[in-house]
Image 1 (tube, rainbow, N blue to C red):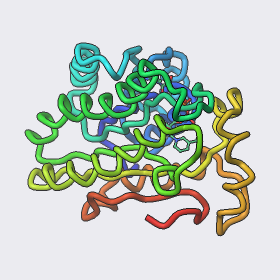
Image 2 (image 1 turned 135 degrees about the vertical axis):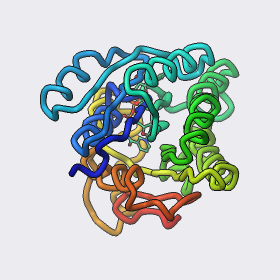
Image 3 (image 1 turned 180 degrees about the vertical axis):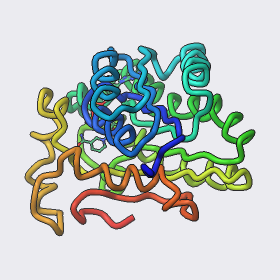
Length: 253
Ligand SMILES: NC(=O)c1ccc[n+]([C@@H]2O[C@H](COP(=O)([O-])OP(=O)(O)OC[C@H]3O[C@@H](n4cnc5c(N)ncnc54)[C@H](O)[C@@H]3O)[C@@H](O)[C@H]2O)c1
């Protein structure tokens, strides 16, 4: 039987970039998948359902808006009857140009925090009651290796990803009594489709990142999928509050 058979997952930001690969990997492992993104994920949901025979659905939503998060949770429960796994992947990332800390507009700072930090909080606020009731759940927060080593000209983004590490630690302590595992996946620089369209991060980081890695090669979305499915599966049932860096050995968490 597939590892995630009978489980239902939500992947925020699951229609594009790395999230698209997460959505497909969870479906390939047998999960029902709700692709939740500000971008349209309908065609992807159809393709995944056709390819893997999984139940896949999509909903366009803004993760920073509480009413829309509530709508997403309601629709997922209506469609799949339960929610076992959430992947807090949606973020303002690939579209961000580098900007000096002295030049970041307050509105942009607030937007990055609203999507990258408030978003995961809202997801947890409205999913945790269901996970508590069913006495199980897997919450996977997506951080970044930059939270550990810093990166110039992306202070807003790096700060938001550092918050995910603390968010995971605090939440794991609070939800552990309900048998809910909360962990962080921290990718290193990944050549995602969206990252290759907006090359600011690549231009800024690629050479330094390659030099910093124990494994001297670029990272691709496929490199993250084993860790993601592991954190979503019963194989990680005694692991919580941790950060797993998948970055070719660049940072030690
Ligand atoms: N690509 C990398 O090198 C890298 C490295 C470390 C961490 N990450 C993290 O991995 C995740 C995915 O990165 P990516 O490379 O696919 O970049 P990306 O910018 O394409 O991913 C962001 C996803 O979130 C969605 N999104 C943006 N705003 C949203 C909103 N308000 N509501 C709902 N969805 C929204 C986008 O449509 C997109 O699907 C992000 O959390 C990013 O911080 C990426």
